[in-house]
Amino acid sequence: MRTTIRAAAVLAVSAGCAGCGSPALRVEGPALAPPQPATTAEVAPPTGAELRNIRNIDLRSTVLADPKVPDEVKRILRGCSVCGLEDPVYADVTKDGEADVLAPVHDSGSGGTKATLVYSVRDQQVSLVFGYLGPDAGLRAEGGDLVLDRDLYAPDDAHCCPTATERLRFSWDGHRFAMAERTGGAPGTTPYGGWGTIIR
Image (tube, rainbow, N blue to C red; front, side, top):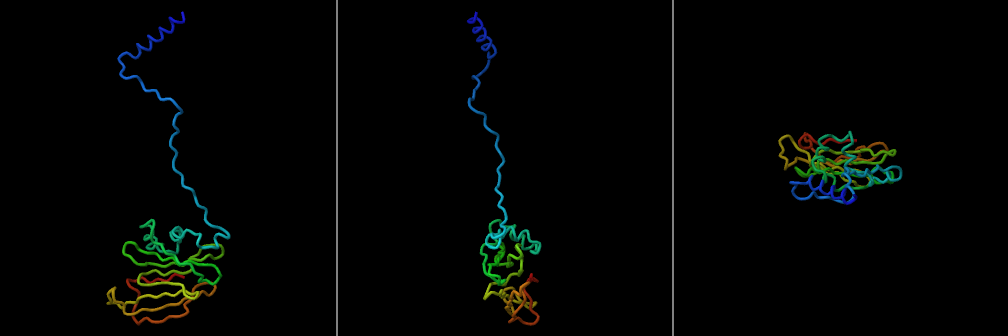
């Protein structure tokens, strides 16, 4: 009787597959798990003792989130995801024994430095304490002060040929950078193209 049932089952399977092509492919083994979306590890911002070391901050994120930084400077950084802040300079210019950072913003399109931003840790917060917006200038740390050298143009000057240059020295007075010395310059001259904004 058992043999008869087994034979009938074989005939039923054969009849069901009549006219089929190649036998169906059977895959053995555990089912594959559906793909999972990629995740990005979040980096916590520095706090406490870590924050005192300004080298631990993300400069690009800090500049882009800073409401004091004009949109034209942020556009330069957004236009190039890996450039713009390549060579920060660390020096103590607020005279608190801790390094501050001078962050030049370079324009990869037209070339040159378009701004230099100075950040410091004040009261456990990263703060923009000074900035210069404009080409044809250089801001550096010297003797614990900030020294700005910039070209000045008369109304008819070509960009290649400024009428004068001037040097401005700023010293930290405990609350802000105050101008301590100004040399050079000429009457009726200004930075090129209406730039030359000082943030402090």
